[in-house]
Length: 460
Image 1 (tube, rainbow, N blue to C red):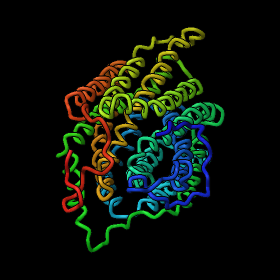
Image 2 (cartoon, rainbow, N blue to C red; image 1 turned 60 degrees about the vertical axis):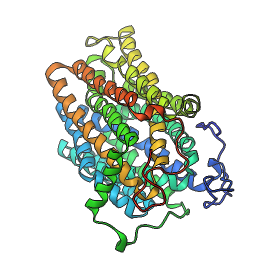
Image 3 (cartoon, rainbow, N blue to C red; image 1 turned 90 degrees about the vertical axis):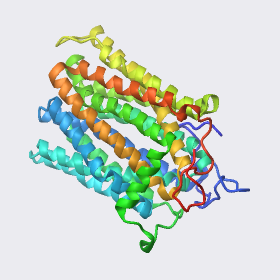
Image 4 (cartoon, rainbow, N blue to C red; image 1 turned 180 degrees about the vertical axis):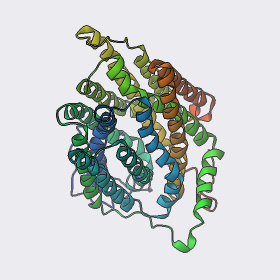
């Protein structure tokens, strides 16, 4: 396996989209950069991510700087996104397994472009209020849920299972470059042009992503004929049953849930902590967040090496440990007095930068390895439902963290909220340590989890 980097050679567009998979006996798969379908998926994902990361910073800044939002309002925006994922998550998994994935991706991109474009329009017309931000956050999250479930299930259609770690590392590496540039540019866009105008850029990137996905010609496995479909609730139940009956998938769900409690709490408190306690401005926060792109880029390069050196399970465990240690730097940052300048601000920023370099790099290792293990282990017919089950469960815990973080921050302060969030990450580490995940050496080359009646049994 070659080491993927963000500066890999450009794709050779003469390669066919339907080149044989290297999972097939005797077949020779083209290099990733010679596979037009993968390049289109990679390009669409990178462009879309670039804009989305700008909005991730701009949406809460719009609430804070334009509408004067506090911890509870930011928690409400984050909660609207998470509630949307909870409502449609399991149904999204069932429908993604029924239908072709690429059209779902395209229409989700178009819908999100329209929703986000409404924010700068309302701002220019002086009619932007918190209810609109809540609605856009909710509706865009519904479409993002369908997109994310379909995207995760679509990749094994484009890339052979034996190369999923490589493919996910490539996509994460370029995503890290997008993160570095988007957060860095986003902070200055917000400071110079205001947050709503920065969100307009995201709307454009979703349109570009839809166009790129529309160029893919590689055929997907046929969708399930309507006559052969089970009731939606039964299909949802089947996906949940596979996750919770599997010691490996169940442990991954619980551990990922623990990290999402941390993310939920930290996501509610981070910007307010940087602005109020550390006295950092939007541009500085954007630059610091951009450093996380460097950390993620390092993590995407480390992931394949660590898997080869330590195996899949231990790499997941090491990634989680580093993620928790990195995030512990945030509440340790010293508070800056109002009007502070120079070294005082730099010290606070240094703690946040340490979190980005350590926490983001090891979190990326963990996510690449965990996601590739799930993709490799689950058959195409049920991958959407398994991903939706995992995603809905972790979204529930992220929502719990967001609400809990808002309440704790409002009552006892932001640092107390961070401390509680770190306990979620510690819980995830304990789950992996006590589970069979720790002993998984290599991801399977063929699915080991399938529906009854498929060609392979549900085994570990």
